[in-house]
Amino acid sequence: EPEVTQTPSHQVTQMGQEVILRCVPISNHLYFYWYRQILGQKVEFLVSFYNNEISEKSEIFDDQFSVERPDGSNFTLKIRSTKLEDSAMYFCASRDRVSSYEQYFGPGTRLTVT
Amino acid sequence: AQSVTQLGSHVSVSEGALVLLRCNYSSSVPPYLFWYVQYPNQGLQLLLKYTSAATLVKGINGFEAEFKKSETSFHLTKPSAHMSDAAEYFCAVMGSGAGSYQLTFGKGTKLSVIP
Image 1: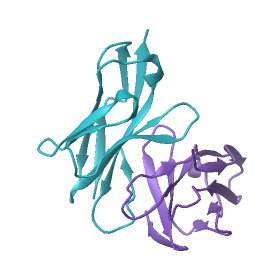
Image 2 (image 1 turned 180 degrees about the horizontal axis):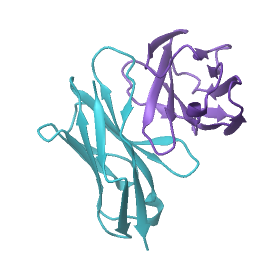
Image 3 (image 1 turned 30 degrees about the vertical axis):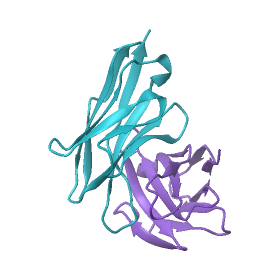
Image 4 (image 1 turned 45 degrees about the horizontal axis):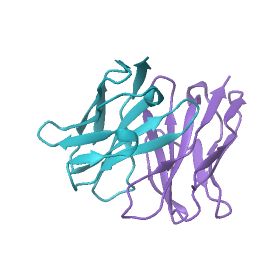
């Protein structure tokens, strides 16, 4: 069964460093999402991406964040200068078409900023 | 704006007992509602969804949920708990208006099943 994959599973970085979290959505899907979950808190929407551009973003998704689909298969989330409060589990999700509401989630990347 | 409240961050049931996980939502448009399950070290897996068809929705692994508009609720039930049901469960709402169809999640309920 097709699945969303994410790498790495765990990333440790120092405050101020740039990180790139990678996702490979399901191959025929068209809509892509990033969510995050700070330990003990809700899963929160960050950004959605369709047709090679951001379609919606939350207040959390500030100028430090960017997303890209560089090669037609990968979907990346970049944090330019990490802060301690960026420590969280980051989930990628994808969806195949407008009439399908189901989002398929990857296993997540745990980001630890020290 | 949409929101989801899950009552009880941790629920314990005995094996074979009824599972009831509560979810209330707030939405300014007719909602689509979802329950996801997360097993340790895994991603979020869709259990079931309500998208304005039948109000009683059946999902995988014997779970079902009933959409009650008057109570703004979408509680998850399973008649008989199994040890393999131990996991964290998330209720989520999606607005049916124009937009990216982002999900708004509740804080999750961790289900423990006692043998």
